[in-house]
Image 1 (tube, rainbow over the protein chains, first blue to last red):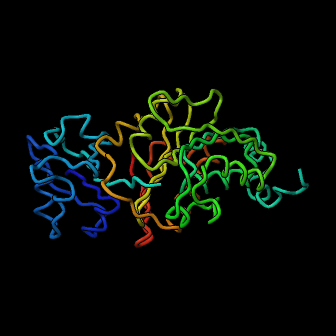
Image 2: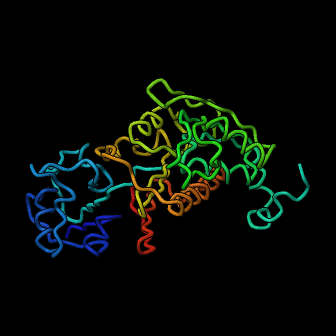
Image 3: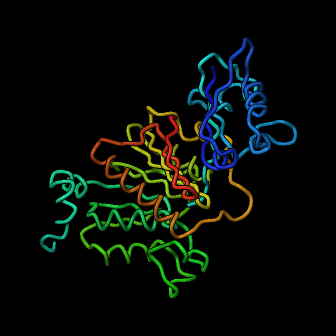
Length: 93
Length: 222
């Protein structure tokens, strides 16, 4: 299984802290996102991806604590038992 | 020093930890929303030395949350005001002003025991983290409306701040910030800064994520 954690405004939007989706061979961040959206009634992908399907600036996506922008973006391969985190940090001070 | 000034907190954390606070120096990047309260609480606790960095002037919208300033200060540079107010609160803390913006040329003074990121934009935060020398703790705070986070990184060992927050560019427009949310996040930062000074950080590579909408607190491993 793949664990997906939701933080801050993403958690509030979909009203849950985490979910799990089954892992299959060839899984990527993008395919996990699609599976996760199919499992959750509230639309949330628009908070993570822009109209071209590219990860937004604003919500960081971590795979096993690493930002996907320092991996292979949405094409980053996902292994069984990986943990994804979606977090829109507050920028103000 | 007035006798018993720190009596109430020493009852809680003991004389040894108090001594560490009084012997320590921290850099506070930004004396706006977060930085005004963070520096104030550290001074009240008896921190030995604070380096304050800022280049801003006080504006009316700052007054809702920037706890060192008042109406008569509008239009004035924040840094000398902060120094004056902090000196009034506790004259035993040495306050060192570093005027200017944090950019690629910024240097963190040698010997600081930690850096508090009280900034309000990612570009300056990225520059600040680059200026922190290996082995120095970096305590980050940030917020947006009722959402906020606090995270500690150890320069040279943790993932660099810019890698963790890659892609988290500044949102367009003014960020909503309330008096209560700023003071809560600032208070959590100070609690963590004390732990850093005692070499027992609680949020090292572990982001505390707070939502005041439903009083939800969570941890995100970094």
